[in-house]
Amino acid sequence: MSKLTTIELQFRIQPEVQKFTGPIFFTDSHEMPLGSVTANGSFGLVDTGSKKLLVTCYHVWEEFQKAALENPDSRMCICPDQKHPIIFSPAKPLGEDRNLDVVTFDIASLVEFFGADKFYPINQKPPPKVEKTDALFFIGYPGNLRCVLDEKLGVGRAPYAVACCSVDGLRFQSDISKIKTAPDKYGGISGCPCFLVRESKPIQLVGFATAVWTKYLFFTHARCLNLDGTIKTFSHKASV
Image (spheres, rainbow, N blue to C red):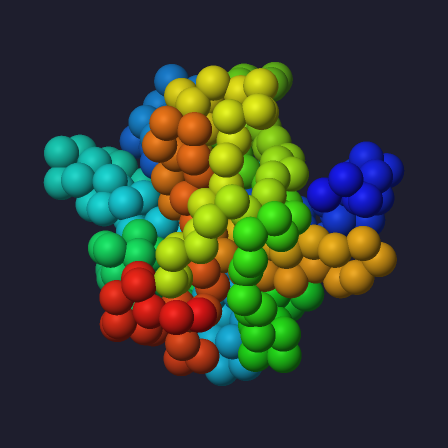
């Protein structure tokens, strides 16, 4: 990571990563005031060649289902451009795995809101292996950055540059103890896509952020995704 300058991260890598991610939140009001948002997360956009997918965490989808049972007015919304939220309340996922904490949705009908170039072409660029010390970069939408601007909901994004510290099958981790961000400030980044970054080379999708525990940030490897949008059914201990 030391070879990647701040300028390279800010002006080359961040704009590329930003294309493939966005915020997702739950609300019980169509007017979207800050007080009506009950929870939020992040999502990644993936093109498998046959499917256009929205990928987020299983626990994000699970929490929405609970919210909808408690309040029929609950809606799940996504922001294609951070300015114009659209309601996204699918009946069921295309693929889901509680253990890997990943869920996928076919959003072919919403491509016009994003643009085809906003979907990472996983069929053309298969996710590579992740190894210890690999440099990783992702953009999340933590809930503590939500605000109201001109009576409209504002969703702030936060970039993170970390390094892989361990790999466990389809999971890998990053030690975030040196980042000056309290663990409770990460809430909302669940589901954001994570990219392998190397000096003067294109970014490569490698996973999705799933959880923070003590000083570690956990990811599920993007190799869990099948090209039909379903999720591989083997244990997270499986080799990647």
